Image (cartoon, rainbow, N blue to C red; front, side, top):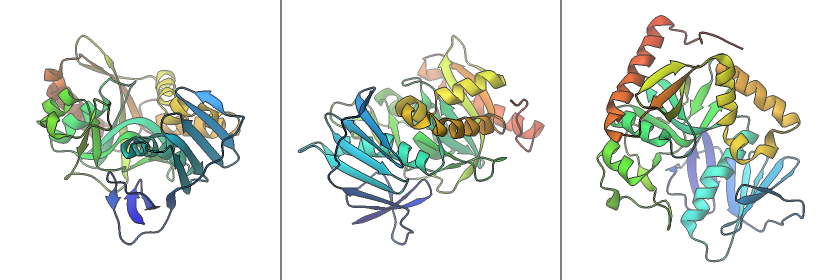
Length: 314
């Protein structure tokens, strides 16, 4: 048996999870184990997998990996296919399965990356391939702390000040991003799995393990010149809902009763966090200058509004 910490949770697992932080003395908030998961004839095809909901349970099936059952925010049962590569199982476990588990526990789960600049969390979100992890890596290289890559778990225990819980100390980077942002030799970094070009970059320093207040969210898109502009409330709401991990990957979870709770969380987020559009050219050479723009924009917000309240609200 193995014990870990991630997203503020104590995890007991029957399989090794080298991406996570080992722990010795924890509360067992989550149990991960191998087991048989019975499939339903009522599965819904979502993207490249099948999905099924039943009360406090959700399961999904990747045809080339196996079946994952997530129950009540406390348990994940993995039913892998014979001879499937372990790294593929862990990718699905630490991606969609954990996103569902965190959603069941009441977190708003965003698809993006988060860093801490002087204990204020700056998050980046966008579609796949737009540089969320690359921006986080660039700021990390400038001396800031990583909180999470791929999944951003936002906690609303204090509705006025949402906090981000740290994930695990690893970034998922394209080879050129790892080389330019962090000075790594991509050939020394393991691939996420066979057939994947992205590399797993372990973080050994400046990884924050405590929840910190979320202050700014940047929505990245292409632009001919670097530019940061505040988002108006309606556009901010659209972007938050569009980049919710559950809305992207497990939409049935936010339909019906679950949808109203998800909507309230998204509304609370844009009413308490400043949101910006971040336009960036594809050139990696401009990343340090863009990172400096983000640092300066955060400092300006702090000076003008120490409470971090947004300029406008829904």
